[in-house]
Length: 87
Length: 356
Figure 1: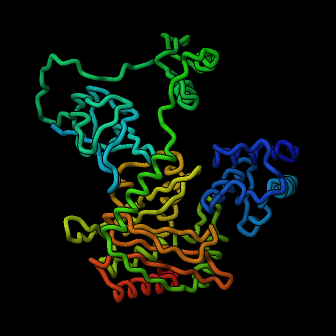
Figure 2 (figure 1 turned 180 degrees about the vertical axis):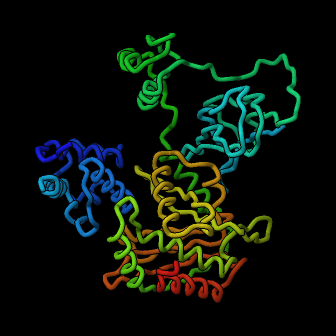
Figure 3 (figure 1 turned 90 degrees about the vertical axis):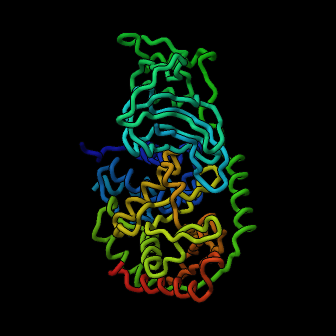
């Protein structure tokens, strides 16, 4: 399945679905796109690792540890994932 | 006859509420089969059977609260004759329902005994659950109550007991983590995300190795004497979303390598936060580790969880890649000299991560 034509909105939705699996009690509808995800959602290192795994599975990509800093906020996640699946 | 009793899943637990039976009369059960889900005021726990046989009688009914030690069910052990009885035996009424409908009903807190099924042979299907949403009489009280308030009371009781009864002594030591973190970075660069490790796994392994040299920090103080444990079951202090704290154990760490520890740690955290812990994971930890480093805490001097005799604390990783490890220990069992040697051993293992 090609993900090249996946829109930013679809990427955003997939990220939110992944976050919902980890923090189901949090209302993500009005999540600020520039806020630090780990602080805002109280994600510890275990939660973050699970988040990475869910993104890798959803987008069929591999995310190296050195790229974790690009997943700091919702906006930076969308940019990073968009660039990963476009290439 | 094996008597299944309400277990004590912590030093402070005096009663528990049966949420559901996973068995019915006549079922054959084996050792360690999950047979019930119990609410301990902190979290819902799956309870294993420590006997084998056929379920003879279910005495406690769902939603009933009973004291620790109360006989909840009778299991007729292999070889025993079945007792003839004119008593009405309590058992769950089976409801025909599809797995998807059952899951949806559980998520929505819907009492399925009040739903009429439209599926094959009268089974309840997903649409029946969705249609029942408009019928408010079908909505039941949630099976699991909000734990936040009761959990605070339970933790308060346990910590008060600990401070009252255990003569704590405290030690701390700064450990250089450069070797360990460098090793970890190299390891993770060669492995996919599913196989990557967090530095917590290295800390746990180092503590387990140190315990093998200094067993006086691993066990229970009960009836005025210390009982050392051959098993190293490391309790991990895990914060629960929405508040609350629980410390279930990774069991038999003495037999695990780093990969096993990481897999078990991840699994334990997920199950702790989704309410799927097993009873032995709460009752069997022989020592506890707490790591507040991710919260920016420099060091943590914890309170020992009775009847354990030690608690190891880790703080944040400093800019120059060091960490402060602390020990809270029971002075009835060990002393500052041994405690210092124990911390030194943890340090030693973390300087040589290849050997962890």
